[in-house]
Length: 150
Image (cartoon, rainbow, N blue to C red; front, side, top):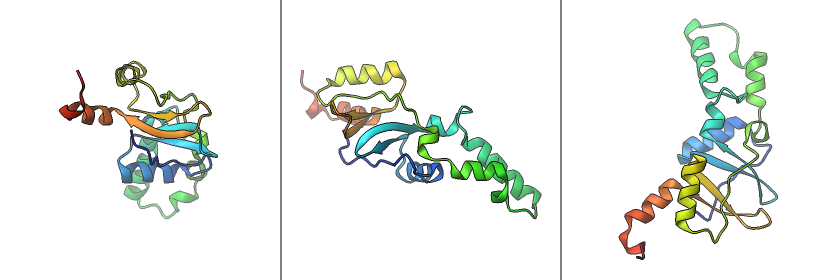
């Protein structure tokens, strides 16, 4: 489990969330309000057609603008202004799959597979974020034979 979790606020711009996820190679970021879990933004949330942000549309828009050499600033269009003003709360998943701090690794692994998620925030009974566990954390543990107890 990663204990020092990087979170974003509900009012963080989605473009900043995407930049943080790219910089740290995260597949998701918890959204926190007063230290408590409010939601999560995943790569799927950024790439899904269900999202108002939808990275592929954003990239296509910019590529078309650059290819056409338009004289108009692409960031002045209403659709681009809407995209650039989206915040975490606008696209985050609100019903987050979470883990309890005392959850067994086997149960956690089953949950990750069954829910088809890459990572889950670990929260206490009040919703405070204690950490985050990803599939890669579990793979690292399995790869370290000294940690496995028969």
